[in-house]
Image 1 (spheres, rainbow, N blue to C red):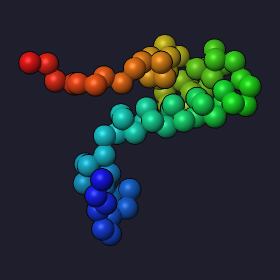
Image 2: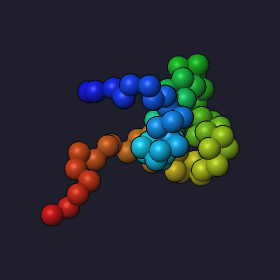
Image 3: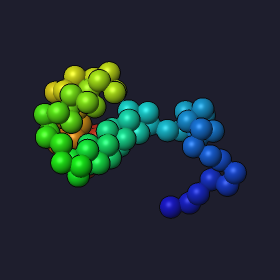
Length: 75
């Protein structure tokens, strides 16, 4: 994959080149794994992340456990 010379994350974000919900979901998955490795129960993790990201625990569950779709477009 090519890199964009001289562009940092915030510049790319300001240009609208970052998928905000995809980035948020990435952060949620990372944090979920981090908390799980610390020994927290899944139900507690969902509550913590729901508060942090202003989402419902069910949404956190869906983000973490949903498999990424291979194809987003339908013919």
